[in-house]
Image 1 (spheres, rainbow, N blue to C red):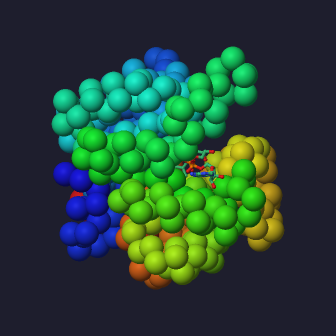
Image 2: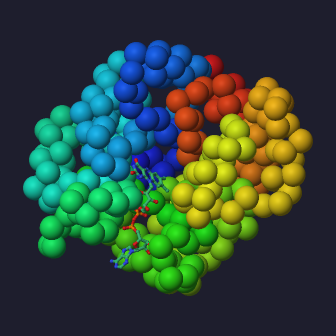
Amino acid sequence: MRVDELIANRSRPLFSVELWPPRSPAAEARLEAALAGLSRLEVDFASITYGAGGSTREHTHELVIRLRRDYGLLPVAHLVTAAHTQADLEAILERYTRQGIENLLALRGDPPLEASCALAPGEFNHAIDLARLASRKYSMCVGVAAHPEGHPEAPDFEADMDRLAEKLEVADYAITQFFYTADRYARLRDALAKRGVDKPVLPGIMAPTSLSTLRRMAELSGTSIPAKVAARLERFEGDPAGFQAEGTQIAIELCSELLAMGVEGLHVFTMNQAATTVAIHEALFGSRGA
Ligand code: FAD
């Protein structure tokens, strides 16, 4: 099953999750607990992250295969151009294709800072190169990343929307970086419509789990934290349970607005924990699939 087909044939908004491959026994146990929690929900697909430096190559592959085999989930494998030569990327795509994996999220990743790790000239510099390869040579269903506030390296929002529109001419759909006001999503959709692009864009949802993590991730991704959201969360500093409840509520309110706008689905960054994702799902859809 391909994600573009799921989107096209949906009778309700999709609900999908992002997981990352565990790299220690403790992380493995957390993932198992998360998967047990998520099994109460009807998850349309699960995307599995890929370490920017290529460090999760085998872990990502193993989890992609395991989610399908042991949990009956539809996996979407993330892959990044920053970590690999074109030959490496082809080897990875060939292996996935042999194993019947049809869905890829094509990303650039963030290139390593050390010059010694830089890719040689002629290798892929942008996600669009990988999207093209996976779509044309391997006939995969390809998703790409979208940045509702513009990618931090782009000269400005409009320039990044030009790049996103080009990516979406090749790719089948996009998933956004996290954001906290629905108007950011609306602005992105408008910018694409202005460029004649109407491919699906699934909003990426991240319920804040702590202020320090939120600020770090927001800075890395160029996401702004609205003053209203910051003020709501700051009241719960030093109270992890209260913070989590408020963070979940903020995510639920955002998702409700997005659903009212007619989004094709919601993609939740689970951080390998089920509780918040389950709470969001139940608030929006009840105990669907339970
Ligand atoms: P690109 O599309 O290549 O864009 C990067 C920059 O280059 C942008 O500024 C863009 O405007 C510009 N650009 C694009 N194409 C061109 C072109 N042809 N010419 C000139 N400029 C161009 N990172 C990971 O390492 N692993 C993951 O698993 C992962 N998963 C993610 C999942 C989602 C849903 C999202 C939103 C992000 C994810 N990321 C992940 C982060 C992502 O790798 C970074 O945001 C990265 O900085 C940009 O990736 P991209 O695919 O958008 O890059």
